[in-house]
Image (tube, rainbow, N blue to C red; front, side, top):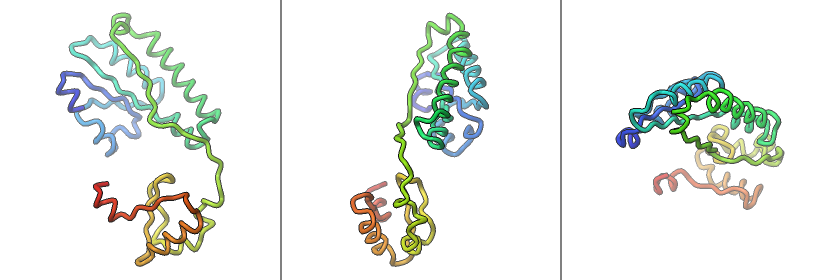
Length: 188
C-alpha cells in the first residue's frame, strides 16, 4: 500500500469480512482501502463497481479469495469440493464481472490470477500421529504449536536432547530441528 500510494496508484483490497480487520490484514494492507465481501457474488459485484469507477489515476484492485484453499486443506486439493468451488469462483467472475464491466473500463482492465501455494494430497500416516507417541508427548510442556509443516516444540526443562534423540531415532532423516536460540541469533 505505502509504495503504490506514493506512486499515485489507487489501491483497494477485497477480503472476506471474516478477515477484513484481522491483525494480519492490517499489516498487509496498510494504506489500502479494504472492502469486505460475504459471498463470491458479493465479491465480484464489488470488484465490478470499483473497476467501473472513472479513472483519475491508475487503480489496483487486489482480491483475496480463500475458499478454494480452505476446501483443499479440508478435503484434499483434488477433491470435488475444491474443484466445484474453483468453478463457482470462475463462473461468478465471468457472469458478474467480465460480462458486465463497462466497455470503457474493460479497455483498461487487466486480470491476473495468482495462487499463494500448491498442495499435495497425502494420506494420513499413523506413524507421524503424535497420539501414537506418548513417550514424546511426555517430554513436552504442551502439544506442538504452529503448523504441521513447521511445528514448534515446547520441551520440558532439560528435555531438548531427549526430544532430539527420540525424533532422530523414530523418524531418521524425516525432520530437521532448529533450537529457538539459534533461530533468533540468525534473525529468524
